Every structure is written in C-alpha cells, then in structure tokens.
Length: 128
Image (cartoon, rainbow, N blue to C red; front, side, top):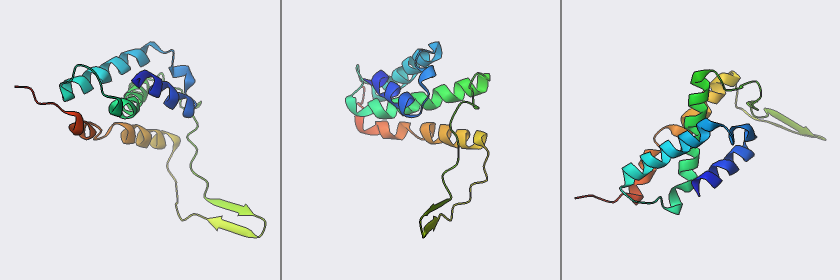
C-alpha cells in the first residue's frame, strides 16, 4: 500500500524516473521498518501509508541530493505566481519569494521529513 502511495506521489510531483531507482526500494523498506519499530506492530496500518510515502520521498530526495545524483535542473521548483491579471482584474500576492531552487528543495525535504514520527503515536502498541 505504501509503495502505491509513493508511486502516486512521484507521479504527481513529476518524479517518475525515481520509481525504478534502486534507492527507492531501499528507502521504502527502511521507512517501513522504522514505522514498524516505532509502532510495535507486525504490519503497517492503512492509515500510515500516506505519511510513510511522504517520509520515504523526503528521505529519498535527501539521500539523492547528498550523493549529488539528484537532477535539480530537471525538477520543477519554480516559485508560486506572484501576480495574476485577467482582463481588468489584477491580483498580486504579498508573498515575496527570493529563495533559490535549492533552498525550495531543502524546504520541501524538511516539510516531508521533520517531526513526522509524531503522527505514529495513534498506532503505537505497548510491548511488555
């Protein structure tokens, strides 16, 4: 289930080349083991599939970036639109984004990985 969610996430983010990467299977296995160790369950519940897929994607991106094998140029890391004009209507967003594509990638990785294990508490089973 988590593998399917990860593949859906990779497709949505236009990162389909990572689906067949050997590191993807390794990271997915590593995240699964970490979640199982944290919850003390024998199988992952369906409720952790999306969170696990996001965590696996964050770990995969961090690993590929640290190895220097992540193609940042091929990723769509453009900032959000600041101004939109349609006919006589114009909308300008107050957000000023002066960050580089690499900084936006780091922010994405952080949002996918930081403090995610806190969500596992609901599924945790005590072991005596």
